[in-house]
Each structure stands twice: as C-alpha cells, then as structure tokens.
Image (cartoon, rainbow, N blue to C red; front, side, top):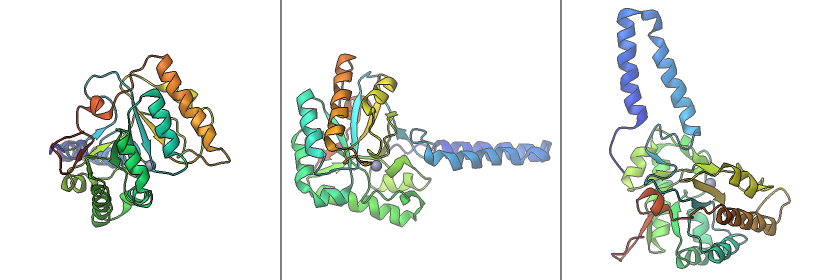
Length: 269
Ligand SMILES: [Zn+2]
C-alpha cells in the first residue's frame, strides 16, 4: 500500500491550521472547522468508496471501460457451484471476496474457484459487521488469521474488502502490516446479502457505468426466494452485460494491480 497521507490526515492538518487562524482572528468561528471535520469522521466509515481514512479502490484506475464482477460472502455450497457454472458459460472472470471461516469449512469450493481461474480477496474471518469498532489488535488478528487460512490454498490475497464496506482510521496501519489494499465497489443493487433479489439484474443494469466494480453476493437468497431465482437474476445480469456490449474484465485489468499472488511460484495473478 502506498504510504501517502490519507485524506483524513491531510484534512486534520488543514482543520488544525484553520482553527488556529480563526482563533487569532474570529475566535467565535474557530469551532466550525473542528465540527466539520468531526462530521466527516462520523460519516466516512459508512461511505464505501470515499477513501477518507485510507486509499480505497472502488472503480477503474487504468482508464479501462470494462466491468468487474465481484462476489462477496462465500463460498457457499448452495450458490458457489451455480455461480461458477454461469461464469464459465459466459466466459466471465470474477473476483470472490471470501469469508475465511467458510473457506475453511468448504475447501473444495475455494479450490473450485481458483481452478476456474478466478481470483480471491480477503473479506475477513467471520464477516463481523462490528469489526471496525473493535480494537486494532482484534482487527489485525481477524485479517491475519484470514490471510493465514487462505495461504493453505497456496494464495496470498493482496486486496481486503471490509465487511459491510465500513472502514476506520485504524484499518490503514493494520492492512499495511499484511501488505493489503482496500477495495470497495461502485455499483450494487442494495440486495442486503441476497435478502432482496427481486429485479436484481434490472436494478443493476440501470445503474452500470463503464469502469464499474459490481458487488454481488455468493449467498443463498433469503426471504423465501430460491437459489434458482438468484440464478435467473445472475443470468439476466450477464446477458444484459453481453447485450449492452460491456467488456467484463478481471479486477487486475481494471485496477492495474494484482489481486492475489501464488506461494511457491513466480507466477502472479
Ligand atoms: Zn460482505
């Protein structure tokens, strides 16, 4: 990860200078920059693509107009094989941001993802939605343990996608220790982890722009919907991308950086 200052650090310096200046000139207004900075700090964790606390990749960085498919929260026995089959049918490449605990539980699914030529990123050990509120040590242990588990598959992910897209000021130093970068997304259907898959394809296709990273979920649908309903939505989405002549590319192509590397090999993917 680049060691440049985060937006938060740069803004903090500016706010401090502005507050000092105001204190000497119009002291009654000196609190304003501090309040604005506090508002930014409060809102930033919940805006996935902002990159306030640390650099966040959320869409094309190379000028490529391609579209990236990313699937979060798997692997899942109910959905991973179905998604892999569809991806193979359309000859699409995707990145799976996996839950390490599930990869440990279903190793054959992780191997299937890798054997099909897709890439894998770290999406935490257990998808603890409150992970970013925990201590730096807990945050580090979670991410490190996930990296260790994934190393058993011969890979070292270079990208971390925070659970629920939430970041915090401590994440930057934790990720630096593991040589990970943060990746988010730029287009989603607000499916709530496949709780709301009605018209998922239609909702996404309306919003997609060249260079987008799409967020999808490798999870069985909830709220009474079947896996075949999810399959239909994925198929409709892939068909829609094809009809609109979008180029579905790998995450590497869109970011210009490797998603993961293989251990014991000079080949990087
Ligand atoms: Zn997730």
